[in-house]
Length: 156
Image (cartoon, rainbow, N blue to C red; front, side, top):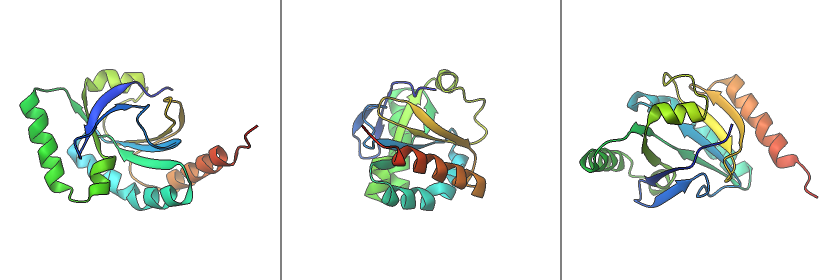
């Protein structure tokens, strides 16, 4: 799977085009589709922070996917999220994407919007890992194994 080219702004109001504007060599991306999914994203946060410290070049992001709407709709939602997230680092890593959710899911072969997806992608959009739903020990083990393999490859 290849991460599609999409544009949005983080909660510090910086415009970004993804995947090329991801800052990491590898990027752990959490994709929620509904407000209630924040609990699932939060269940991964401590691990994501630990892994970001452990693996140089790994950066994690939250990419809330919201259906396209008018300018006032976007301002209302973005300012509401910004007000609820006082931490500048969290605001920096939260990039809201307003787009056709069905097309986005189809591009990434995501079956539905019932749970979050967690992906590891590079700046070219290559996907190396995927899991779905809240934190689990099995998900953690698979993610750790994928990152270990990706970061221990020898380079010519």
